[in-house]
Length: 135
Image (cartoon, rainbow, N blue to C red; front, side, top):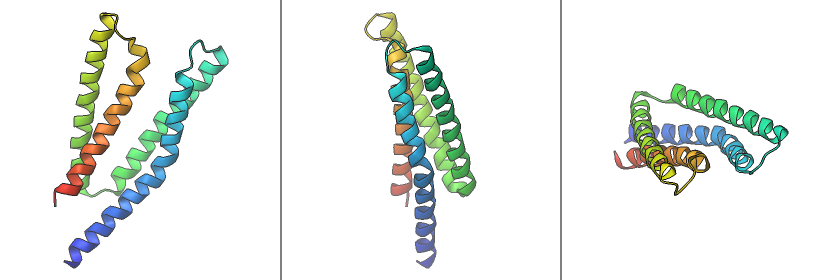
């Protein structure tokens, strides 16, 4: 029983650390998405958007590396399997969007970032559900 409580405390501490690392990164992602959705950007606006998107991408990689270093073998396995599900969701979403773009229903460049964000959401949701219900 004491081991289970210790494991729960370690899991909570790891989640809290990822949350603390991830909140500024998520805010930066919202800024990048907002800047990227402005139509008819000037060269300066495009430069800012590319720079912020690049920083956002590097920050996401930094948060992931830190989270994996903190995690034990079991959590790493869950995260990698959840990432695979999220990656599959992105692939399916991009394929559907490509077909709809070819049919003239939507424009792919307008939904590409939303599809990627949806894939990240699926990854986090699957990881959370697996850690909550696996015990």
